[in-house]
Length: 142
Image 1 (cartoon, one colour):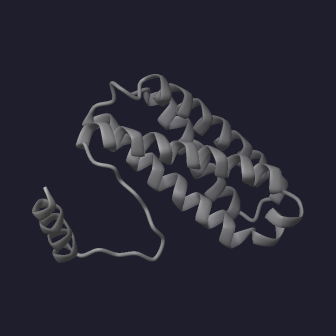
Image 2 (cartoon, rainbow, N blue to C red; image 1 turned 180 degrees about the vertical axis):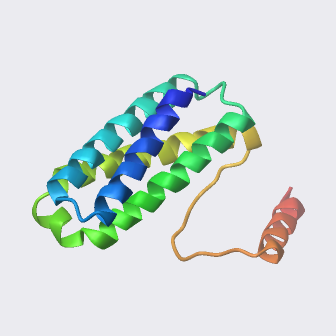
């Protein structure tokens, strides 16, 4: 995978966190959010080109990036909620869109490598026993 793209995303996330802890202006912070969005979009374009050739190690790298992006996304929502709705809606929507495309690309790569469709349903949790029971019921039908 393209290491400089990972580094750009990582740098932007660190910069946002640093600026926030230093009580920098929200303009500075959301300027960095724009740069983060651009970095994620570049990573998405690169990933999309290689979606059918991503290996497990590269997928692991992408998942780590996804965790970091989710972390900063949730942090921004929590810390700057009112600013997002009043002044930085466009910047936050751009980040949200880039994040969603990243998640979609990772899901596609997982499906190709693992061979199963992965879905997320907020608030739904399945135990190993639940999965075994579902698998057993499906096997009975086959």
